[in-house]
Image (cartoon, rainbow, N blue to C red):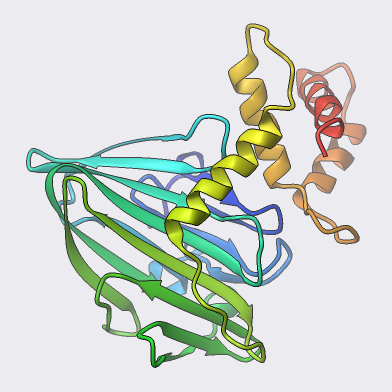
Amino acid sequence: MPARIEDYALIGDCETAALVSRSGSIDWLCWPRFDSAACFAALLATPQHGRWKIAPADPDARVKRAYREGTLILETEFSTAEGAVILIDFMPPRGSASDLVRIVVGKRGRMILRTEVVLRFDYGSIVPWVSRLDDGRLRAIAGPDMVVLHSVVPLHGEDLTTAGEFTIAEGETAAFVLAYLPSHHPIPDSIDAATALAETESFWREWAGRCTYQGEWAEPVQRSLITLKALTYHPPGVSSPLRLLRYRSRSVDHGTGTTASAGCAMQPLRSLP
């Protein structure tokens, strides 16, 4: 069963977005744009309709999470009596491909984790053809769509799922990079996860830092602006989820709190391109 909708967190690159559950599962992602078909669609059905989960082998691990301050970088901490790790999820600003990066960092002791990647294009209806490249990366192709997975963890096929189990100790790191590009394009080198993390953090902090509001609600105002920015399609000419928000804000009663909140949020957003 998918998680409750309120238990999902948003990550994105201003051209598309993914939803991450508290259990470390990415259950929704339309690639390469907001209006593309989903390749992870477990949110609407079952895990076999597409998801990417990284989670402790211990189902009773405690979970807490938060966004890194001033960014859209999600940090989920899993902890047990034996150890604790932080799962860092983000999508860097676009380069030659659209990238989804997941980094596991050992914080205390040791922990066994498992990753499962279930790729299903066109809302779960198409199982891609998966092959291993000469450099060890995995390539999945379905018609015009292609994704390439770089993993420092050994992965294997298991019932139409790409899976792997690994142990992280304090101070150790395991990085995963999933890149999307059209299937007829040449395959680029994988990005460096640590460099992408630093650049993504710099991008969001620089953008969010333009907001000058320092009142009582500074943190939630900044978080709202970051979320709206993430839902704004960066290249011009294509509609985005934010356009629906603008339409609804004009169509409802202007005396309600919902309309007032939408109007207040949109004004500062317009000054932060």
